[in-house]
Image (cartoon, rainbow, N blue to C red; front, side, top):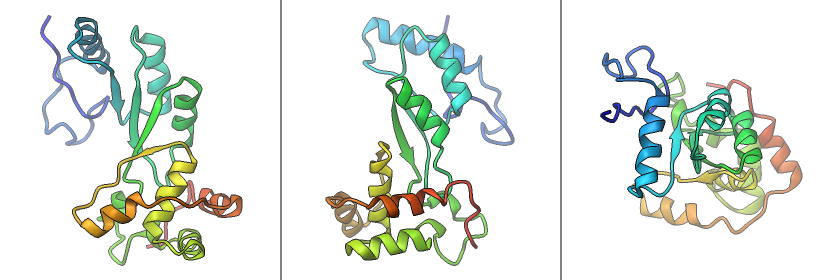
Length: 184
């Protein structure tokens, strides 16, 4: 059996896959990855953009447990259910777009709503750090692995300086953003 075409999402919709129908399902791809794992070609397996239901289905189906699940998570869309499924099953949760980059192009042209949220700005101000640092610290408090993207050397350096702790009240205020629509 040849390896099925691997997609970055478990399913295609709209023009996500460029109009190309994948060969097989995500389960076929997972079986091919497990075969490569068994041969020693790869050490660990993970998935990207699965939701909580799909991860539960994967955990029931897999003979090799995923090491990591990568998915979007920011204060407005924390993906808490998925994070809970991962935590309960010993799977690392890697967050992307934690700093709100996914909101650009969705009518948020006057600034990043994540980095401009009052709860984030207040927490950053209280600790003398940038809003980006406050959001990354929030994510770390929530046991997320974060990999912020930047081409700016100063931002990269600042993103590594997360040696402060948010208070319970600051965490609660940022958590309360989850599921709300950011102001445009």
